[in-house]
Image (cartoon, rainbow, N blue to C red):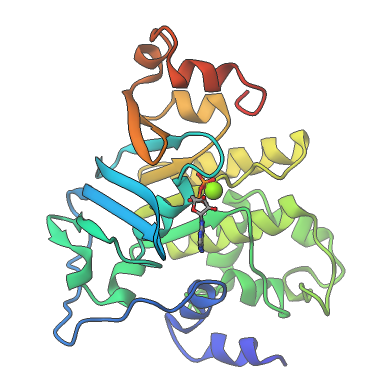
Length: 282
Ligand SMILES: Nc1ncnc2c1ncn2[C@@H]1O[C@H](COP(=O)(O)OP(=O)(O)O)[C@@H](O)[C@H]1O
Ligand SMILES: [Mg+2]
């Protein structure tokens, strides 16, 4: 068995930590007196957030709230800083100015593990270990039962294709196992998130690399995952954006427009209006 497989057995959180640090620099550490979150009750707030990579400014004075139970969509052209905002919430990086608050407390006050236990991320870059499909889904929930795993896989529209593989849930995925399509890999990651059952979801262009048919299936799984949760979504699909409680439009590292689809679409010469007419938001 591979090393990652051994880690998965070690206990709740171990696999999740591997996942998070895998392609992110380790720049952020707990304060000595860091506290546990007390669950998630009210919302997340970005307050006058500034951020730069090294000395290159990326975000300037970003303020918005993600109230509990709501969906906030971030849009803007490539390189504007959408993924950077998504990365600041679980503290892959810390803000350079301003603050991010969870239930009114600066996220730098919390233990990172406690903060991240409230969240799941689904991005284009899915990560699967060389391990069974079962163990890939239970990452972060090694105590899950077979029933729970199957239930999660069904919600994620993954159960049927898993059952068609030679060894079902015991099939090995990754470099040393079967090759899965991008959409299948993503559905395993969605099943993982369903099983984790987080309060907060961060979805970063999760379906952008998929073909239309696969995207439809993944999108359906994501919609089910989003039900009843608090979501920050970076999306190109107009249907996802339209359904958001608030759309935040970024331009040049700043918020240039914000509101509901029906309001933003009315702005003559508006950035949102222009973006929605471009090919990549359809
Ligand atoms: N790890 C990094 N180091 C340095 N610059 C980065 C890093 N990640 C992103 N950037 C730069 O920061 C800007 C914002 O990137 P990003 O948040 O990924 O934008 P978006 O998701 O809107 O396309 C871009 O100019 C990008 O090149
Ligand atoms: Mg991005």
